[in-house]
Image 1 (cartoon, rainbow, N blue to C red):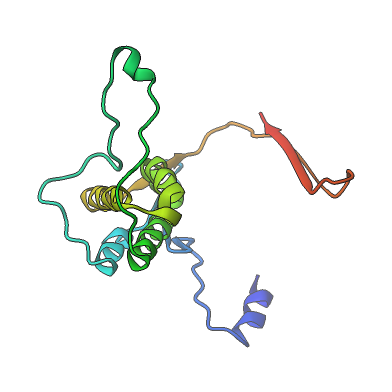
Image 2: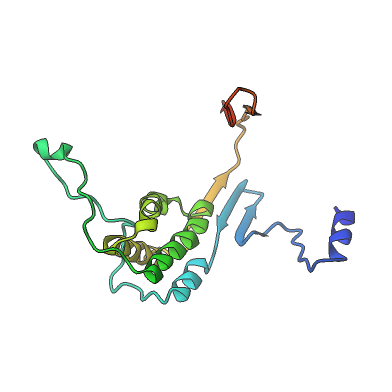
Length: 183
C-alpha cells in the first residue's frame, strides 16, 4: 500500500485515512467491541438544502412522497389518473433533475426511505410538470425534517456465497447477459 501511495503522491494531492472513517463522503463509525459499523453523511442534506435555497417546512414532513388517495370498492382498481398539470420550464426541469441527482447519491448511500419517491420522480423528470415540482417540494421537506440518516451494520457469523456469470456477444444478435444468485 505504501508504494501505491508514494506513486500517486507524485502526481496527485491525496489524503490518507488509515482509520477508515471517511469514504467518498460517507462517514464510517467503527465499534470493534460491539462489532458494529454506522454509516452516515452528516451535513450533506443541510448543504444540499442550502444549495437549492430550500426553506424548511413550518411543521415536519414525515412522508417523502404524497400518498395516493384511499379508494374502496371497485374504484380501488382504477388506474392512477394521468397528470394534466402544465409542464415546467426548461430551467425548472433542470432543477428537478439536479435535486433528484443530489438526493439519489445520499439515498443509495444511507437513506433508503426516499428511494421509492425518487424512482417515481425520476420517471417524470424528462417531462416534469407542476405536480412533479410539488412532489420535489415534499421530498425536500422530508429531507429537511429528517436530515441525518444513519445505517448500522452488525457483524454476524453468516457466510455469504455468491455464484455469478456474465457473457458478451456469445449468441447471434445477443448483446450481453448476466445471471447469478446468492445463498
